[in-house]
Length: 345
Image 1 (cartoon, rainbow, N blue to C red):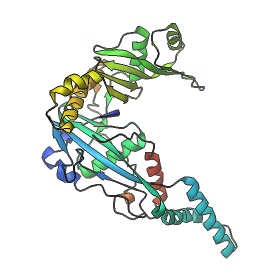
Image 2: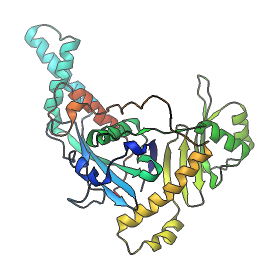
Image 3: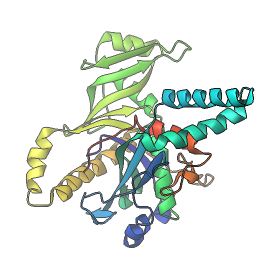
Image 4: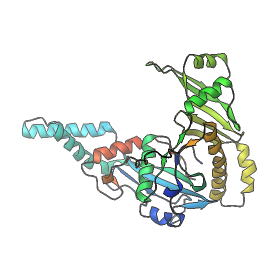
């Protein structure tokens, strides 16, 4: 199940061909890190079966899974190694190495240390909903999102996900919902919120498991605090937290949904049953949420969207040796360690 959600607009003209998608993803399969690779990534079967399809089709939806492996090498260990190499060089030459030489020593240290480093695997799931013109990534961390989009656009030529915009900002809408005590049709206000002032102090107030209809909250809103996060409920079936940038987190289906709807799919493969339940619920929730935010704005007439920025240097694609960009690739690997990891489908 998705724990979090970042949605992108995927125009019909930029969607993948379902008949060719598996073949395209196969050109970027996951392989473990080589001895001197800080990070490796690629696609794996989302169903979890060896040699299974890399793109699963369930009720018109496409489900993918991107696997990462990164070497865990603390910065303090690298710095100690660089200091030792620099000290040795100074003893041999009688001169302290300059900034440029220390950068070279850092790459040397990485190449020495990487083969000894432990590795960690994580994954990101991707859902493509052609009828909704959506591409959804199970992540909110910037590094993880950039890495997923980089892999997708690298594997599937012509794929062009665009930032999804709504006519009204989520922050303004959430503030209005809390001020009025009323959410859009189908949604209910939960018991979690985060408010922050707009001045330099950025004073923050967080409510957790707390009713959001008290006078204190209204006073914070009247004082000008903006709503950064708000828990909502969808038809008493699914809880989630909406952020000011439109991302969803802490998605949780009500236990009753599994008992009622899960029984309907009990004779199906567990993967198919869970996928039908998830995509069916989100396929209703997301359009309703976008409508509550004033409707989608797809940038008609605007300049073409720029390709997703690469979070993983091209020199660090799978099966290519680490070279002078090892430090940059390791920084990316470390930034992914705190991402939105979740169990397989």
